[in-house]
Amino acid sequence: MTLEVFTSYHNIISPLGFTTKENYSAILNNKLGVKPHRLGKLNEEFCLSVIDEQKINSASEKIKGASLFTKLEKLSILSICDVLDQSGISLRDPKTLLIYSTTKGNIDLLDSSVKHSFPNERTYLSVMANMIGKYFNAVNKPLVLSNACISGLLAIITAQRLIKARQYENILVCGGDLVTEFTTSGFKSFNALSQEPCKPFDAKRTGINLGEAVSTILITKNKLAPTSMQIVSGASANDANHISGPSRTGDGLFKAVSQTLEGNKIKIDTISAHGTATPYNDEMESIAFERAGLINVPVNSLKGYYGHTLGTAGVLETIISIEAASNNQLIRSAGFSEKGVTGNIQIIKEHQPIIPETYKPF
Amino acid sequence: MELNITSYCTIKNKIIFVNGKELSVPKQDVASYFFADAYKHLEINYPKFHKMDNLSKLGIIATEAALKGSDFLQRNSPESVAIILSNKASSLDTDRNYQNSINSKDNYLPSPATFVYTLPNIVIGEIAIKHKITGENAFFVSDGFDPQLLVNQAQISLNQPGTKAAICGWVDYDNGMADALIYLVEKASDSIKNINFNPLNETILTQFYK
Image (tube, rainbow over all chains, first blue to last red; front, side):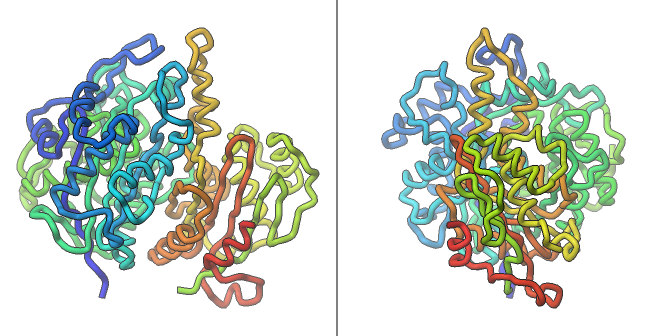
């Protein structure tokens, strides 16, 4: 018999709050995490989603030996703590695993202009994840995934498969990345950064906002939470196109969507897209969704609220989608007003209830 | 499910071994000379190679060496091949170079050509692009070479309906040290019965990595 696998408790730490509840209610109130910031030696302002330093410090007071941990480690410990408290699950249990998803980890430690007392080895992603694991006396070594923008979703898919293979009963998937001068200057060198709040799928989209966030979701063999949902299927594909640009015809995404839907006779009520607000990404996604026949399915991107949160994006966006689905809610794609992609897709302009059978495009 | 390694390449201390046999590439201590010599010796003929960072060059050389003389890509269509790699230093070698380019205000030269390599999974992208491989892919980061992780993830991936074969292994480049083991994984079938192969397990991987 094949096992079913479920989502259960979760947490989001972002500029919009330190719990999922705070984040979800901020989104319903149309609050944006992205705001103009001037970072380090960059001589222009860009819209970035940055967590208030003072809030981090005061929340970190409850961490034992907080000064031993970097900013990202503290945020991760706080996020995991919240999920462990809600669920009663412990990482001391051999049937529980931590998967950590990140693109850059403690990359801020490389900046020689910032004084800190952390050893160089903390820039190694596994060393960072082990620090977090040790805080919780984890018996299993954390599994670390670093696969660019898809890291978070890949971590959830990996968790689902490991539970299906009966290797673990509970897997905490924690994703985290910071806004640093490193990533900000890099995306700027690509001319990919927007100075205004980003506008995914919009005709006047002007590029990416970067964002920092840590989010954690517990994936389990048993339905543990009142809002537990089954993870039916997931897939990834490489489009073998270009190291920094997707196929113009959305080949990779089309393949991943088709494989996910294959053999699962379920109706899709909504899509939370990647929607980074760059010209090529959003165009490619719209073409892939149309090719997959998803032309009447309401689509949003949450980048307008959080910016692109890199290694945590897939985790964070899954959590918001679960909250929305359990409240029968479609979430507005912030920043969108006029369609600016050629694929025939429906972008959600206003928050509204999901009425699956009668849903009409706007 | 029975999985087999049909070809492999180990790179240790800038010496290349293919299926256990040392290639006669001249010994070079400097990584860039080593990569250039290996590229010539393997007749890779792929100009993009010269623009890659050290991690991607290492991954391409080990993969090309493992694929050379193998019919792996004839037996397995590129959309059914997964790529699963791991290392310790992620992209830190290039991260440090990039950070140096933005450390000082007077010498502030962030380069998109460097920044694009500041992700470990770019090496997967480079291998995929070279051979138009569009299967699933994943990059894991661990404290050191971890045969248990690699065997487990290959088994899980090859259990998916879309995956028939995989390019897997370890590709680490840190502080001038190049360390790699790339191997080709295929399910037991009639099409590989006439070639030399080894079962995919932790003992074999530990042996191949040495």
